[in-house]
Amino acid sequence: MIHYYAGAESNHYCRVVISCGVKGLASYYIIKNAKHPIILEERSSGRLPGLFMDSGAFTFARKRIDNDPDFYDSQEFHDYLDSYIAYVNENKNVLDIVANMDVIGNPKLTWRNQKILEKNGIKALPVVHNGSSMKWIEKYIDKGYEYMAFGGLVGRSQLDSSLDWLKRAFNQIMDKDGMPRIKVHGFGVSSPVIMTSFPWYSVDSTSWCQQGGNGGIYVPRRRGGKYVYDVSPFTIAVSTREGNSFQNHYYGLSKGSKKVVHEWFEYLGPKMIKDESDETLLELLHGNYKWRARVNIMYFEELCKAVPKWPYKWKPISPRSFGLLS
Image (cartoon, rainbow, N blue to C red; front, top):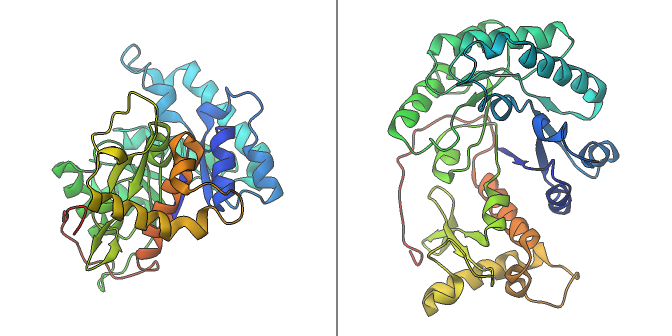
């Protein structure tokens, strides 16, 4: 499974992504309004190993829909769509994946926008949203698409209704032997349970930088003395600044729980620090959000390694939970 690290349009986080040798995702909505973003240059140079361009349609439209029910036929929307098309065509040589200008809750408009992009020379990744009829998934497959995205999952991936839809959606793409007929990308999928319970080809999320910016890091749980990634990790606050929103602050943990955290640091240490610093990893994490983001990237990279290589036969997995010392 490939993890694209969303938020990489920020120059600070773009450098973090590059330092970890992983792939980034950028939102066109943010890029078009940013001053001197470095991400295209970094991808062109090869320092950034991969770049997924999201249309930013949801961010662009979410504050306007209530005021204008016909927004998706408005001049404002079509101006944005035209600017996205122009941007992609100008930079397509450095864009590995380009997402459709999707419309959550409206598969017909999403299909319309897909065809507009294609007529303008863009091989866009089609998107089907949580709650959509299975006929839309089958339509894209019948039309020959080999890679699609499931969207509308941000903030919802733990809800029973979303889990039910995902089960039906993945059942739809499986052949008679239980193997996926197409590749699937998960927009905004950050839940380890969801990531490991379905045969994603790729996913993206911003949780790696959001948690790091809020002072937190991910620490995987263990089973039989080994790290496991099919359950949600602990989020441990390590920042020394006041106002952390996490209940589990490192300095409030028991001696045994601190030992688990330190063992994770020891596991990451050679991969993270090398010869760059004489400081311990904990000292680096205290006051530096970039280091916390790097640790969170390494967590997700270890999770991706724990998932079978795509394609693989899908066997539904029931969510489980464990204690820190399990």
